[in-house]
Length: 133
Image (cartoon, rainbow, N blue to C red; front, top):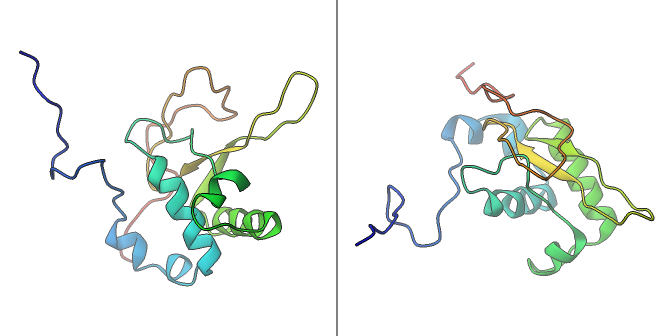
């Protein structure tokens, strides 16, 4: 009989861990409400093995109560400027089809995401170091 796979805290559907050291930093605490919402959308997709393959599209934001395209773009820019996320793939529109931009959470390592054509390679260490300063 196969064992059921459980996460360490027994939370159905998984969870997003936001390190307290991250939440104590001013660039996190001073996030606009829109940027915080987009960060939650990105974080809700993270499963521990797909950092770099996280998306926040206008249609995804509709499922979270909606957000104007300009507001979404501004929130993504804010998260990148505050080094909370990094863009791992540019969006593209063209004859060969469209694809959305992808992002990674900077306090986690970037994972190998086969088939996603990321512009960044997997990483050994997170881009953002968390420490008390």
